[in-house]
Image 1 (cartoon, one colour):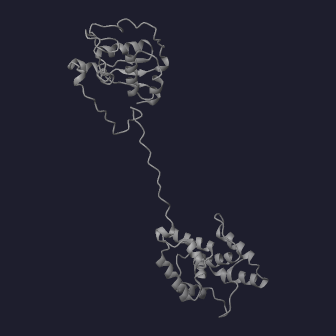
Image 2 (spheres, rainbow, N blue to C red; image 1 turned 90 degrees about the horizontal axis):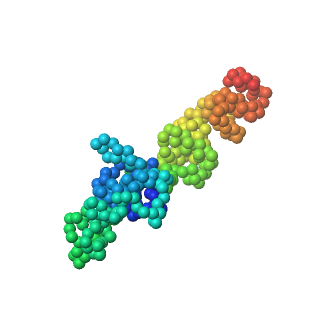
Image 3 (tube, rainbow, N blue to C red; image 1 turned 180 degrees about the horizontal axis):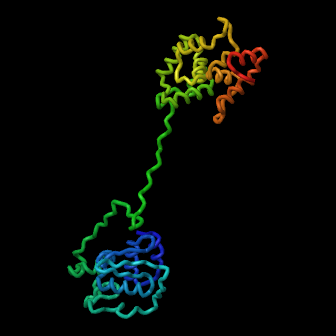
Length: 321
């Protein structure tokens, strides 16, 4: 059914039988007004006889309300064209063979003529029903109208499937998914930016921070003798998904100076993780498009090395400033 064509057809003024046939066609048509119902189908919908339906179709075609294209041994294709309808006034006479009684004894509205013209007839009785039975008002029983169980299609040529209803579920938070959140890490004393960086490392490695994993990190931090906030910072600086006391001790040993027990100011030049850690200490972070050597050079310049340190950096680590 095309609601567009139907809405244009309803206001048109014409005799009742023609209007019923036109609305029946519009109810079967797509948005272009094209349909191909059989005459029997139109008779069933309008409660008119075959002869009256044929007369109405001819009248509608002459008035420009429809056009017909007959197909050999197939249903006729109708195109409903309400825009081309030549308006009919109630004071106009009906065309020949469209009013009065025809040879079949039926009037223009599809009602059969008979000697009992004053007998009342129910409004919902079809002409085909009256041919099969004689109407008796006292024997008639009310008909029950059943509501359709399914919504009719908007277009006989195929209507779009209804869109899926929007999802109302809330986005999963860390508590609902069973993982430790940034807020929880911050409550443990971890810097918020450090917490976000570390959790990002774990997401890339597809390792969600569960409460059990977090307890393991805290235990390793106690074993290493460092605060848990420092343990998370060290893990983030080295892109570690976790923290182990053995990893920390190994890193300290590798970063140790030439003299045991004396901190080496240039130990950060020994590894990339040291460069990143030194950059974090100086408030520098590598840009997403910045190459590693460029970031390393920027960190070294920001470190304000003394002439002695520059000389040793050149000799020990091949750094040219």
